[in-house]
Image (cartoon, rainbow, N blue to C red; front, side, top):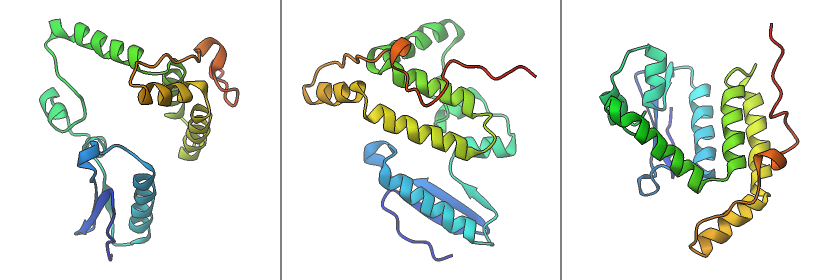
Length: 182
């Protein structure tokens, strides 16, 4: 495979193994449109190459594919978890993370993300998750919360997101419904 140059990642192929490495260290590998397009291009290239037998994207996938057990320190070192705590420090650390989420995020966005993660893990096809996620991004981008997020950033003040889960969840998905028990 003739591997192209990418702006936000690198692709190497060696001995039937393609490795995709995110490469935006100054932005902590934050996902953006260019990265999305380049990941799609890289996957298209590896999918079209009959000599590629495995594509490595992250340590988490390696652990999923191999089933290898890992300890907490390795999970932290490899970026799978953000911190490791002694048992008596675990609850206060979890509360601190929850406080960070509650203080700095739009509640509708958090609720939608939680629902999509929970429900789409069992979707019949990945396209269902992609379609729902695309609609969610469009809806949240046009929301009052998005306007407030931009305004608060520009004004260098904490955001006060106006949308509420009880009244402002997008109508394109049944956020509260449950599938029938079988």
